Length: 285
Ligand SMILES: [Zn+2]
Ligand SMILES: [Zn+2]
Image (cartoon, rainbow, N blue to C red; front, top):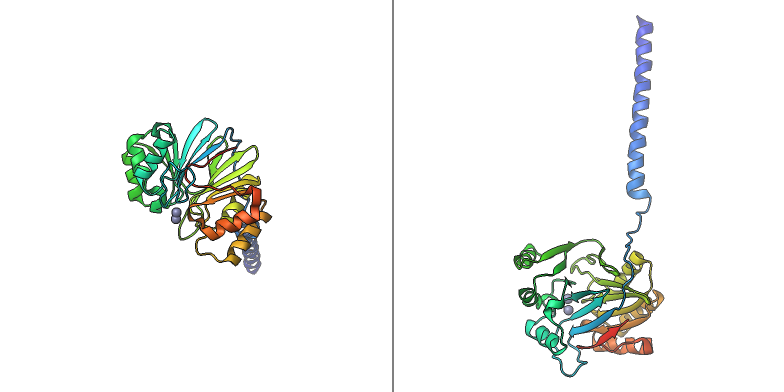
C-alpha cells in the first residue's frame, strides 16, 4: 500500500513539473513576442505617380493676382489620371471662385482627402459635395460621427483612415498621426522622390517626414503645405530646418500656417530649392 502511495506522489510531482514548465514556456513566449522583439515596421507598396501636377487653390498667401486669398488651405493634385482635392479651405465661395478662375470644374474631382478637422481645411467640403457626389472622401477615423454622417448624406463614399493606406497608384496617406489634433498627410511618390503635402502639420513636420520615409523607404523630394510654425522661435525653426536637411528633404514649399519668419528662414536655408507658394501656384513634377 505504502509503495503505491509513493508511486502516485512521484507521478503527481512529474505531472506538476511538466505542466508548470509548459505554462512557463507559453507565458515566456507571449511576453517575448509582446515586449521583447521589435515590431516589424509598417511599410507601403505605394507605386510610382506619373505626370504630377499640384495647384494651390486656397491659401492665405497670394501668388496669382486674379485669385482671392483667405485663411486656410486647399490644393488639387492631378496624378496618373486621377484628380485629388486635398483639403477644401475655409470659405466655400473663395474656393469655388478660385477654381472657376483657374478653369477647374468641380466635376473633375474624383477623390477628396481631408487632413484634419479644423474649419480652415474642411469648410469648403459640403459646397463641393453638393455639386459633385461622385467622389471618395478620405477622412481621419477620429473625425466625429456627425461629420461622417453628413458626408454620407450626400451619397458619396466615405473612407475612414487610421493607418497608412494607398489611395491610387503612387499616392498614399500617412494615416492618422499626432495625439491631440489628429492629422493625415498625403504622399505622392514621383520619379524624383516623395512629395509630402501637409494641411497644418499639427503632428510636427519632422515626425511626418520620418513617418513618410519609414513607410516608403524613399527620400523626400518636396515638402509642401502648412508647416504650423507661426509663433515658433528662430531657434526652434533652425532646429527643424536642420533635422529636415538631415532627413534628406530636398525642396520645401511652406505656405498657409507656416508664418513669415519660418518662410524667410526656409528660403535662406534652401536657396534655389525653396518654392514661393501662394494661391494659384502650380508645381509640375
Ligand atoms: Zn490650418
Ligand atoms: Zn489646423
